[in-house]
Image (cartoon, rainbow, N blue to C red; front, top):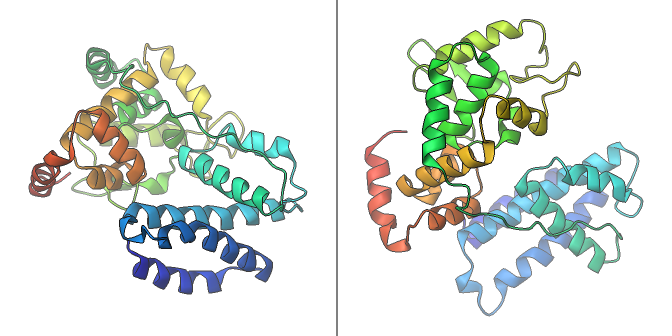
Length: 298
């Protein structure tokens, strides 16, 4: 996304924001985010930078609506609510909240704090042997519940985080006559055998337990399982979630360019680039990887 494309999106989107107080605040926040990209070094602004600003603005809009529903604004919202949100939000949401509150404090709109996330992207937990052995167990051991088999295989095959898995709903899957598709982002993934059979068997066992559509319902009616509870369940069968996910994403990163990886498994382009570099790739390998990915459907 370049500046012209961003401006076109922004001019159309901001007019849809209600109420007018939020619209005015988001205009100020947008100017603050865009100003560095229009500096003397504007020619160095990347497409990812404009995508990030758009993501931050979408989050700010949603966050302002959230706190208004609780009869608060930025100046009255309790810090404990921020802390609770940070304990269960995604990485992208964490970074967007840090950016929003940092700006709001400079404008004296709030005193709320959100600590900067410590980046822990590392190959320390890479263990291909464990990933292969636990994947084989999930594929063949029919005594393991279909819920645990499905959740574990989604992590092992596609590097899904436990939070992403816990938030899956029936609408993320499309069962067709010829194939079954999973939508982690706008780009669908065609599930290989035996994942479709495991999925269908699992959904059949839910019956009325998940009327709201959660694929992995929690103990409380209408709620999904927490990522912590899911991780503990998987650990009981020997599934080391962090190790399996790290290994899966690194292996995918070694085969796919960042843009394709981002679109396939639904992570930010910044995260995809970081994983791609961690897997040992350099920018010189990008054209060859891109060509091979376009020749092979995923």
